[in-house]
Amino acid sequence: MIQAIAHLTTADLEAGLPWIRQAPRDAGTLALIVRRPKVDVREVLEEGELNVSEGLVGDNWSVRGSSRTDDGSAHPDMQLNLMNVRVVDLVAQEPERWSLAGDQLFIDLDLSGENLPPGTQLAVGAAVIEITEIPHRGCNKFLSRFGKDALRFVNSAVGQELNLRGVNAKVVQPGTIRTGDAAAKIVNLT
Image: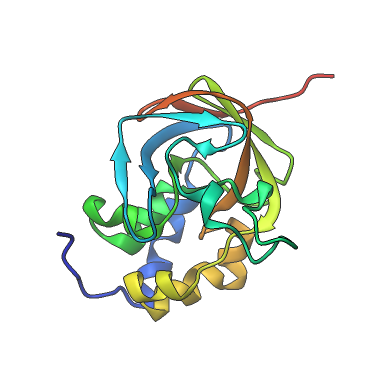
């Protein structure tokens, strides 16, 4: 069972910004893979399969649906949620609490809009994913798990500029991913 802990203050969170801003810009590391087979259930994986139609195989994305689609089906541009590992480490305070954020992939990489604008592709293990346009913002679950200051922090102007809450992505090339795999921007030279 994951223990509840005291939430950080705005000052504590802002003190972590310099470390967050030092995240690698071009190539980082996949630090954690989390599958969500059911609402509020987390499975930490050493290895996972990314699939174009399912996202992270075994995750509930494809059956959970979305209020952003006309028919309530899963939104294709919200297949994966990525979060900067430095941000989750700061707000969660303990590695055992990282999975509470609700994202599937935690990467040590600068996820800012300037560095990874929508359409940017990342090679992660044997797979390729693409950053999508739909913003990923903090919600009531994030609030209850990490506190009101953390929610304000990730949704602030700086938080949105740096995508502190993370980014949405979709799988464009299926493949196996493993904790410790490189996560690198694909540079199109044409």
